[in-house]
Image (cartoon, rainbow, N blue to C red):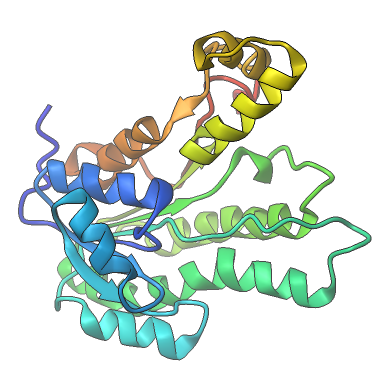
Length: 257
């Protein structure tokens, strides 16, 4: 399928590693000009070398000055903003301090808000754009651990709804993509170790069904599948999708509304 992203410029925050890197690569494969973002000097350049495409840009988006320097480094026109950057720092109700909570809000909410505020005016002028925020199913079904992270992602979800109302009728599509457990190399390695200790088997093929026993799909969703959804939402083919929280979790969260 041709997603008609040729000629579009996409900025993917935090795309120097992890799922963000895969999203950047997927958008580039569809013909978009992709701005690969790093927080520190050298991160984005290394990512561009790894995926073989893209243009490196740098900015510490947990501060206003860093976000502004990032946008200043971008081309004049950014058509697609993917707010991928975020951090699931460990913590608990008893151990996480007020600074931990504020830090999580800076990373998972205000980092996105800053880029949106800076890019929204030009998207309005263009009369077309895409803003895709990367959330988590935990904003709907939070765990008792990492409460500061889930609270921040919940705020990101409600922020997306507010932004969708603000952008109504402008040609700017706004959506939230909420993955469940994603099969990253780190997740695979951790569950391999755990599964071998529990006697589930030695190979990933033996262990994954035990890990995914509560996932109707029968396996963990891949980073590539998350990237495929984001690429579609970024495209003109998704003009009719707006203000949605789209979960990509293999059916783990059994809520239809």
